[in-house]
Length: 213
Image (cartoon, rainbow, N blue to C red; front, side, top):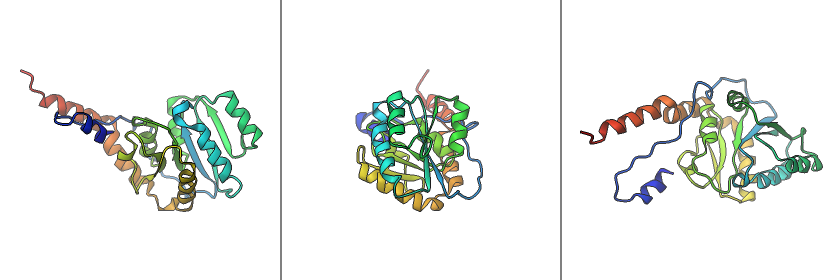
């Protein structure tokens, strides 16, 4: 998003300030070695921009060929989607729905997960990715909005929006190579960019530089 802002305000002095994360809740907790079944997590409002249908089509394709994952979906799941999951035999077997849960509980769900998946059609800079990183969770996200500025080879994989083949490949790759991600490092680097303290200081520094008499 910072790159887009720079283009929009070309020739005008500007500075990017990222969204913030409450690291009192969203933080790294050391865990035991990854289990044989790894938990994918998706957190959203389940609206059209999030492309839930595309994500679940890919999960349905992954299910017959892998038994080493489950998907936990956090948010207000529509009844029609629940029925579709039941009809496909995925609900409470491969896909688990929490419904809407308190903010602190979202953090706990992230800390207990291994991979975040966000297959959005369009985005700005989604806070859930920043929160997941602060918990040390590597992510798969789409190449839109501000996401390219926060996903790199150390913390995740990017795919093109709507490209289900790329998402399927990325899921295989991340499940196969999960042990190569340093969760503690992901969390430390994210907290150093997105915590309240860091962003608050950045705002304070900007205000200090304003030419106010």
